[in-house]
Amino acid sequence: MSTEIHRRRKIEVIVEAPLARAVIDWLGEKGVRGYSLIPRVSGGGHRGERLTDDVTKVFENVLIIAIAPENLAQQILLGFHTRFPNVTGIVYLSDVDVARSEHF
Image (tube, rainbow, N blue to C red):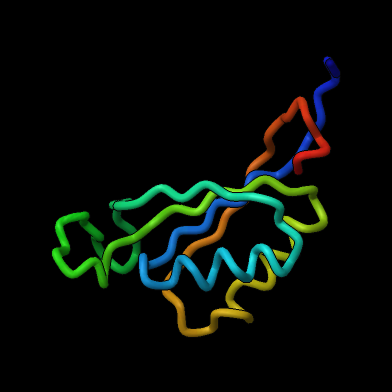
Protein backbone atom coordinates (compact mmCIF):
# COMPACT_ATOMS: atom_id res chain seq x y z
CA MET A 1 0.00 0.00 0.00
CA SER A 2 1.34 3.40 -0.98
CA THR A 3 2.11 5.87 1.78
CA GLU A 4 2.81 8.73 -0.58
CA ILE A 5 0.66 11.85 -0.52
CA HIS A 6 -0.28 13.48 -3.81
CA ARG A 7 -1.55 17.02 -4.34
CA ARG A 8 -4.76 17.39 -6.33
CA ARG A 9 -7.43 20.09 -6.70
CA LYS A 10 -10.92 19.82 -5.30
CA ILE A 11 -13.55 21.23 -7.64
CA GLU A 12 -16.76 22.43 -6.03
CA VAL A 13 -19.70 23.45 -8.19
CA ILE A 14 -22.93 24.87 -6.78
CA VAL A 15 -25.84 24.92 -9.25
CA GLU A 16 -29.60 24.62 -9.24
CA ALA A 17 -30.69 20.99 -8.83
CA PRO A 18 -32.25 20.59 -12.30
CA LEU A 19 -28.85 21.40 -13.87
CA ALA A 20 -26.86 18.86 -11.86
CA ARG A 21 -27.00 16.07 -14.46
CA ALA A 22 -25.78 18.37 -17.25
CA VAL A 23 -22.87 19.57 -15.12
CA ILE A 24 -21.96 16.03 -14.02
CA ASP A 25 -22.03 14.83 -17.62
CA TRP A 26 -19.82 17.75 -18.70
CA LEU A 27 -17.32 17.01 -15.93
CA GLY A 28 -17.13 13.41 -17.15
CA GLU A 29 -16.63 14.54 -20.75
CA LYS A 30 -13.75 16.74 -19.59
CA GLY A 31 -12.07 13.75 -17.87
CA VAL A 32 -13.20 13.94 -14.25
CA ARG A 33 -13.33 10.36 -12.95
CA GLY A 34 -15.88 10.68 -10.16
CA TYR A 35 -17.95 13.06 -8.10
CA SER A 36 -20.05 13.44 -4.97
CA LEU A 37 -23.41 15.20 -4.96
CA ILE A 38 -24.75 16.94 -1.90
CA PRO A 39 -28.43 17.91 -2.22
CA ARG A 40 -30.28 20.81 -0.64
CA VAL A 41 -27.46 23.32 -0.29
CA SER A 42 -28.50 26.67 1.11
CA GLY A 43 -26.63 29.90 1.52
CA GLY A 44 -26.44 33.54 0.58
CA GLY A 45 -24.47 35.80 -1.69
CA HIS A 46 -24.69 38.87 -3.88
CA ARG A 47 -28.01 37.62 -5.32
CA GLY A 48 -29.60 37.09 -1.92
CA GLU A 49 -30.40 33.94 0.03
CA ARG A 50 -31.17 30.47 -1.32
CA LEU A 51 -33.00 28.34 1.20
CA THR A 52 -33.78 24.61 1.04
CA ASP A 53 -37.54 24.88 1.55
CA ASP A 54 -38.55 24.99 -2.14
CA VAL A 55 -41.22 22.31 -2.62
CA THR A 56 -40.73 22.19 -6.41
CA LYS A 57 -36.91 21.87 -6.12
CA VAL A 58 -36.62 24.19 -9.12
CA PHE A 59 -34.65 26.71 -7.08
CA GLU A 60 -32.91 24.19 -4.84
CA ASN A 61 -29.12 24.20 -5.05
CA VAL A 62 -26.82 21.19 -5.03
CA LEU A 63 -23.09 20.91 -4.44
CA ILE A 64 -21.04 18.75 -6.81
CA ILE A 65 -17.57 17.84 -5.54
CA ALA A 66 -14.85 16.29 -7.66
CA ILE A 67 -11.09 15.88 -7.43
CA ALA A 68 -8.75 16.26 -10.41
CA PRO A 69 -5.18 17.13 -11.37
CA GLU A 70 -4.31 20.84 -11.50
CA ASN A 71 -4.54 21.28 -15.28
CA LEU A 72 -7.98 19.63 -15.52
CA ALA A 73 -9.31 21.58 -12.54
CA GLN A 74 -8.19 24.84 -14.15
CA GLN A 75 -9.98 23.88 -17.39
CA ILE A 76 -13.17 23.24 -15.44
CA LEU A 77 -12.90 26.54 -13.56
CA LEU A 78 -12.19 28.62 -16.65
CA GLY A 79 -14.61 26.77 -18.93
CA PHE A 80 -17.71 26.50 -16.74
CA HIS A 81 -19.38 29.78 -17.65
CA THR A 82 -18.47 29.34 -21.31
CA ARG A 83 -20.17 25.92 -21.35
CA PHE A 84 -23.09 27.10 -19.16
CA PRO A 85 -23.40 30.82 -20.01
CA ASN A 86 -26.89 31.34 -18.57
CA VAL A 87 -26.47 29.30 -15.41
CA THR A 88 -26.44 30.85 -11.98
CA GLY A 89 -23.67 28.87 -10.40
CA ILE A 90 -20.33 29.07 -8.70
CA VAL A 91 -17.18 27.04 -9.20
CA TYR A 92 -14.20 27.13 -6.91
CA LEU A 93 -11.02 25.17 -6.39
CA SER A 94 -8.95 24.26 -3.38
CA ASP A 95 -5.90 22.12 -2.71
CA VAL A 96 -6.38 18.60 -1.36
CA ASP A 97 -4.03 15.75 -0.64
CA VAL A 98 -4.89 12.20 -1.70
CA ALA A 99 -3.22 8.88 -1.02
CA ARG A 100 -4.39 7.02 -4.14
CA SER A 101 -3.52 9.33 -6.99
CA GLU A 102 -4.57 6.79 -9.63
CA HIS A 103 -8.21 7.38 -8.64
CA PHE A 104 -7.99 11.06 -9.57
